[in-house]
Amino acid sequence: MRLLLQLVLILVVSIPACYAYRAGWYRGTSAGPDPDLARIEKTEKSADLVLDCHSSDNIDVLASKATISENEQKACTWEILRKHFQNDGHKDQVVVWLDTKAVGWASPDETPQLTYLKNFLVELGFKRTVILTGRAHRQSSVWVMYDSCEANQTTSRTNKPPGKEDETERKVAEGQAYEAAFSASEWIGECEYLGYEKQSEISFDNPPIALYRWVKCFKGPPLQMVPVKFEFEPNSEGKKPDGWKFGEHQMPQRHSHWIIFIPNAVPVQGSFRTYKGSFGRQEATKQNLDELMDVIEKHTAPGN
Image (tube, rainbow, N blue to C red; front, top):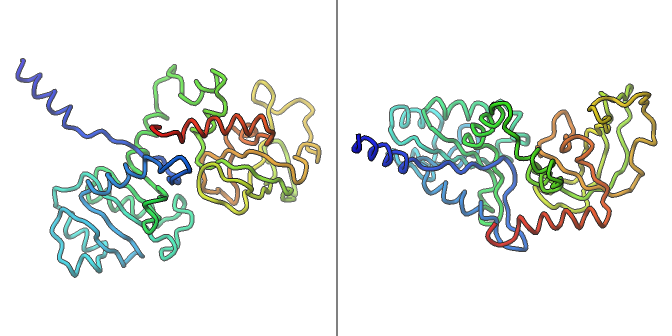
């Protein structure tokens, strides 16, 4: 029995922990480089296969634990990878750098090409897939498109047993609203409201698209225009307020400034969804900006 326990302990200790990367932008700040940039570099160095994908049939093999000829490494294809990795045992991690301009994947989460890439690597038997872009600037900034480890953890969090309080909800309940919004958002910025798109029918459940111009970016990639689905504020029961009727008075004053929190920095049907609907649009008052900067400084301080 003692020997069995020792063997189990050795196996548990030897299993590498999966440090998952959320989809989004990782880059340095005035306080120093993002520590996740170093972790991403470490993940790449430990991967069994590292690819630089220029197009669907133009792939460079940057590193491989399987034996691939020099010619095949410089002009690799998916079929060559299938030939070498179908029955190879080195398939713990694969890192793929994508040239999004050459491939034309401007919105990676919505393209069949990226779905094919994920499915292809799963088919080959890789346990973890990390897809990145920005290789030319990876010392200062990297965009994480996909991490299967994070996707699995997200599924686990979504399917958690009833009664276990979500971390974001806990922070909101404790009055740490901006802390929770910062943690849950891929993009945060101060924006100027320009107006909204006119549409045939605007209702509480069919809000307009509000148009904002980016003024300052606090987190995430720089955006020129920030079209936002302008979800209206519900009543205390989370429903449409009694007697609600759309009017110009419910929209912000033109050229007013707002703090916008966006959980997913990939637009859906031409607009972004804000964090918790109307809460993701906070007036850019000095008090609100100071509170946000306190949260940002806490997260960008050395050692965090």
